[in-house]
Image (cartoon, rainbow, N blue to C red; front, top):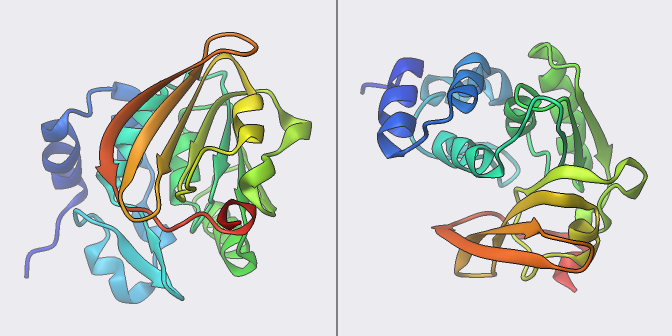
Length: 210
């Protein structure tokens, strides 16, 4: 069986599907995905799909990681909030695009795994908190961008409120049929919404389930 290479990931999975942002492509090239997955799936490191990382959890498909980062349009001085650290791979990609990433993971073992993975990868500008991401990280707000990597049935209000004016939030929304949604804060009380592609993410746990 032929496994995808890093070069094939960039050319066939990303560029061929419309990932054009040079900074996103550079981040995807430079973050070693193999550092964030178990040994038994390392041959599949750059395959075009999610991979199991244990206990029913997965690492996202490279294309989805790149697509969400490109849509968020991150600048080098930006401060980003990530809800759902997982194994830390997405945070590592965001960390190459932003000044600092604040990431919240509700599952304790995943939060600890992510910390170890990010340390192995030499990433120093990510802060991880083990908590319910529903209420965000108010003491670090406001954020230039917010990214959810787990799907709530609707966007939690605290996350929208922690956006800067002109800040952008991207999230998968829905229970069975999920769609990526882009929210942009236009003013103190005005938000725009754009529906994007269909996706499949794990459900957001905690307060979002109620």
